Image (cartoon, rainbow, N blue to C red):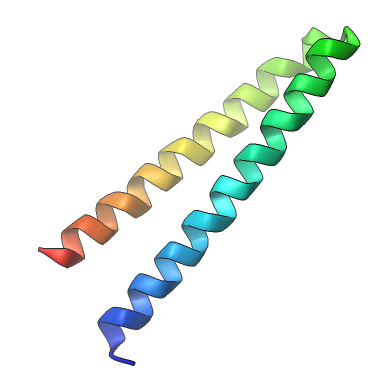
Length: 67
């Protein structure tokens, strides 16, 4: 494998991990909302937003390497 391919595989692995974590957060948020505990939703939304920003940055990294 070339170094470029290795970096791409590593970035994609991190992206998959972030997206799985974000889906897990979504499930927890739904469970809390349906269980009647909406107070804990704000921290979950903040962490989910951070995951989104990290994933966006990783995608921009891939796009920059492809050019």
